[in-house]
Image (cartoon, rainbow, N blue to C red):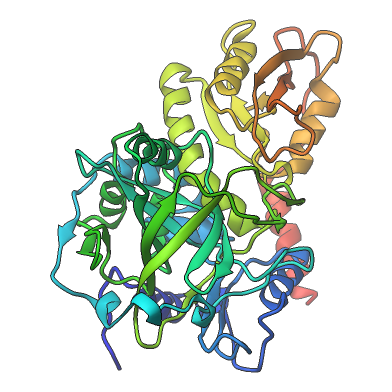
Length: 457
């Protein structure tokens, strides 16, 4: 059996499947490239299950597919050597100790290099995710751009569909660092060299979601998460540093002047959306392994899509909030709220502290529209408990804070045409004058009940 490097997604797949076979579903039977992967994930989610999927026989793409990797917070925590209840601390502990990448001469990604007229993107393994999607989409594509003077990289996810034999239609985020780098190239009258990584180690993929200051490099964070420098090679034409153990890398340029049609595509809101920043990515080189797998990310409001985008953001926010407000015990972004809701549990020490915490988080995270604060004995990973706290502790006339006219998310279907939103904080803590004793069952009685049910089959 081939021994893959620890930074290889294949090594992760083999090791994790051996250690947690109950958490991986391998399907050998034929699966369609038209929505079947998404349908499998949705069927599992309807049962409260989020296993990783390894699809070995996908029609129409000539490659195995691995997907739903990030659907489980337990699985993400295991990647970081932790448990779900310590996920934020584990992520921050590693991310705060970055390593600069190690440049290699070659790696598995250099097994095949295709360039010039031989580039044909129709040969790439791609899936159609939703019936409402315009076409097959790359959902796991991480675009890497480098600062022309410092070489500092920016990594970010961008959906992409085929536009022509050698170009992709993709959509940059107009407030993002890659957009800023592209406009620097535009000011100099030239296209921007970039590389798109499709299929890297899961820790590299998580690092690509990190929120860093402009000029900081997510590849360094990837090294921190791995506990060693990320091994990279340089792309043939522009010398962009990409993971040496990736499955597929596309090298080329973004044209700042081109505007091409792209979308609709199922986004994290649960709605099929178009975007206004339709960019043209001309591919000049394809780097790939000879038997490249497709590491796909479920689109829409899947647990995988939401977790991948929010775990680094949650971890950063929790660290900063807890440093400022030690009374906070937990922060959670529920899947039910896409990226727009957050729950906070705290031991409120003085009147008004919950409001202060809500305002801090609403000001910090521009995705958020609603923050609910509850007491520390409420399990904020369960929507039902938060709604119970809201039902029994909350008075609308005095426990609501609403702020208007703040920057919102461009994909929010309820936001104004100019991209602003209102934000709301709900104080569902008991407060100093609350009278009531929470009904509870003793641990001994619960243990007896569990034993009785087990014996009853």
